[in-house]
Length: 188
Image (cartoon, rainbow, N blue to C red; front, side, top):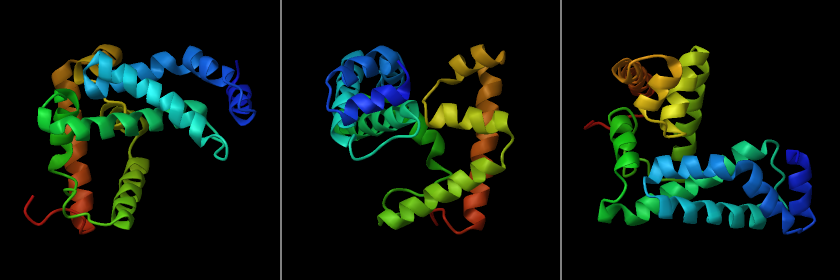
């Protein structure tokens, strides 16, 4: 079923919308949640919550790209679940990604207001727009979609170490850009 038709089912409050969403995007949402959380049970709950959030959001919101819309919901729910359970040290996969980025983006404590977080996001997006497509895709696939260096390496025909080195250079470039713009921690 086409995305537009699925969205129309949501707007008509037809429960078939969830079945069609599950059929078309369930695997995508599950893989994303599992990469972030590392625990199948938590990933499955996160995906179920994604369907509920989509149901509660449409209407009034009408996503232009349903896959991206669902991915954003899934990722946000997974990160929220990870934060909630972080004290239990259950999510090594997401912890590793955040540790990799910690030296180039400000800590949450220093970015106190929502507007500052949005500005940081805008600056990172602007920086991503300056990158060659393959570097931008690599960065996004690692830090948004949580794909491992091993999986990226297999798909791109590279050794995981080569992928890690490219990602490290990208993080350093991001840190340099943010430092020049005064958006990094004084201590870090």
